[in-house]
Length: 250
Image (cartoon, one colour):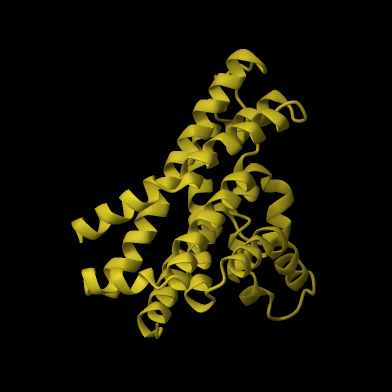
């Protein structure tokens, strides 16, 4: 597995978008920093959640669909001989890249706060915690949210070979999943107690942590509940994606 993981890292490192994405993230953060308050900018790392998610969606979709289209996946399966190793390695790669993007977002935020939008990092903000603690916790929460999206992207990628379609569907989940879930819960039916555990509801984890009062009324879940739900669905979608990938005929 170590050799196949190294090969995945090697390929990923030589993808142009791997190096372009951090630059796009920085541009987005600079552009949006002038439109939000300094403290909110600090807590949300310049509201970088959606930007990071979109970048990860593009990378995650490309990792599978391009190899399906040029049949490079057959070479990977032949060399590793285990479908799980191929699938897991790609998941590990995107997880590491997710961590890197979030670390860069923190570094960029500190830099912007020091040069453009000064803020008192030790001032008490949400949850009676210092601003800097809020930022690190929000980042941790967002890593869970983004990996939930990635697990969905991977599952879709094993079903659909078209990179454009996978990216479009995945971005639709990011931007319309919240609306669909809130619409389902707004009916106040007898099934609400079950519907609130739908996976689209879990994609609101980061937003709920930042705007608890507003989003709790939408998700009907507490922070611990929605966090556990997100972690559970990561495992569920990972397993489903792997099972589809293992049964897929190339």
